[in-house]
Length: 565
Image (tube, rainbow, N blue to C red):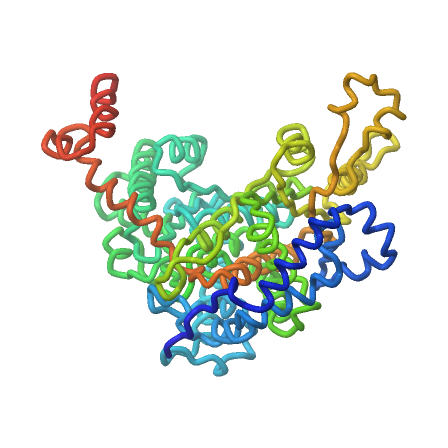
């Protein structure tokens, strides 16, 4: 089924209305403090509940009437139809001629038979893979699965890169309080040998299980690390006398200590992994959208199948809300449109995500791939140039650490940096410092930062605090720095699923407005291709070296001169 060409958002009536609205706000002067004083219903008008999450958009540079304009734009770029196409398996990833069905990964088992795409019962396929994952996870968790010497598994090591690493490691870190089987996880991604060396340095090979995650089982970094991990395992086992070094015992060790997440069973078998212990996923799942597929196998092992199902249910909550809620009241659509508002009308390039929860310390890094690999495009899905700015630079660190690092730029710098502040009412680790509840101390900072960014401090307020006149200008905060507050009940598997789906759909909304294919990633390919050409030149191939540009030749010659090993 051919997909419709993208709508040029800049040519729509809604875009022109938004431009007029923006111009009027600029002419009147944007003043959040005054807007709050003038409209006592502002917070209620701009706050929404989605599942376990509360969204407060009131500190953004919008008015309640802006939401109607956002809804008009969503209508005019055919967001509703694009959403239906995605959910139903239309090949909206047209440069790769693929469906985009990460939402199917978390559909309920009762949906089997209701989504047939390219001749496959997609939900049935997903549930069959989940059942196999869960059965395997239960074996590892119960101790039924043992290593080659009969010891139970204590550490699972995920070997993958990109979406095969960022999602699993983020979720593992986020849900650590719920690891209930005494099994820990580690994640190896970088081809830099330091990564593998540090992650395996103190491991016991007899209690370690490696999970090699590569759809094609051909990803350069992943397979290089997998081969080195295999060599480490066999060398360590042989050195300790756990195996005698015969081909038969080596093969048995690999089978007991390696499994795969891959669809290329031939390569899996050639590596030495039993194809029965390979768990597949599909072309319609992009890597950055795959954490809730078999790519999350380590998570199912560490946290258990029941909690993995809670994780999927959280995704499903937001998936359904996004698809069914009218645009003007749809917090997910509003959040995506706010990002478009800042990117295209305020010309903002950067977007901070600031979780006030240490367990979410890898969440900004995860979102970097999700958003920037998806929407870092300069052509639309029909191959024509984009008509406005696309993409945002996503970045961030947990509060309060970030407050002592880069918040200065957000508060008083010359750039406007919208920020999402994320926090939770409850913590799994309640502590008190004397009479002071530490979690409330954290939340005090969470509330205070958005207040300071929104309302600032005037020169007169600084003077009233006794500030010497010559440093008053340095103590002035302009305010009107936009933030979105996302406040949850607690960070658990369900809520984390909600948060991930939220940002997946926000990315989708932005991509639809900009008319781009958010699901391909051709920009990562050129560097990979060149690396294969350049690598032979580094140490031995003078002909390959001569074929390089002058800068690359100079750098390689420096390497040859100073390398010590």
